[in-house]
Image 1 (cartoon, one colour):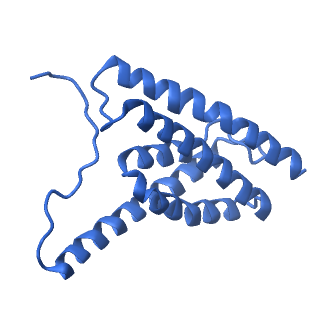
Image 2: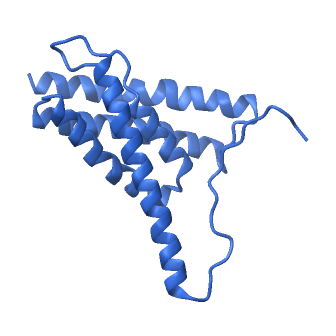
Length: 167
């Protein structure tokens, strides 16, 4: 038994109840809880991010919602990633509108934030090839490579293009 290791994996239901309504209720509750946590985390991350801006520019030194988004994607099966992105969108819209960001820029930034998280989480899942556990140096190194460097690097070109095209 190892001590001091942290393991994150997605838990899937092992067996399905015979009663379809019970399964539907469990499924809906799990989806609803996931959506609410993503919404709340993304919204609070936006508020923190806007607190880290240099006025009058809405560009933050650090943007925590991207971390929330990539963490949610890593903890959610890929077939349910649509839910994560769908829950983040209204949080993104609400926080950005409250900070008086132009509507077109709001949409552009959501696209680039989503691309960053999808690139990082998708590449991480592809390279790990199984449940994502941070129990080895390899898995932590892959996380740093995919999520910390590659995702932000490639999405930064999209960010820059959106900023240039909207000014």
